[in-house]
View (cartoon, protein in one colour):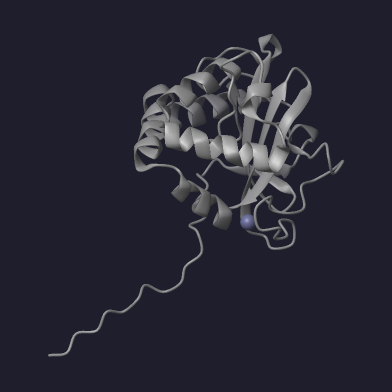
Length: 209
Ligand SMILES: [Zn+2]
């Protein structure tokens, strides 16, 4: 009998399936673009429109003090493609880091408790006031990174958004392969014109989550 290899149908990236406690709030200033003086409108990689499509996308910003030194929004298509630039070893190491240091269900539970006591229903403060891994308050940090999953002009509040201290960013960088770090450095230099050596103190290296 003749066998045919059917190519897999062309599929877009899998969208994140929010948990039952997920909610959406307008994107606050922390996750807006300083350069665009408002919402991010297009993907940094493909230039695709982020606001009209209704597709999910990711926003990442790295701050030093109150100054954002890196800011980007990326559609999930490009996110998938850039994930392929990461070595398998690094992807596994980052996943292990997340799973061993943060509990998805504990975080959702803690956030739910805090939200019930919170009168500020539209706020994302409970999500990003403390480092996801160390619990250190943001007010005590020199560098920190925030990551959010968005759709249109809204943030999806669930496990994300998250905030990570500069110290933890360094710890994550340590588990990545040289190849992956090289790719991230190139990405940052290409898009932000800032060679990683400019990131003082020495050793501080933004990572793409
Ligand atoms: Zn894109």
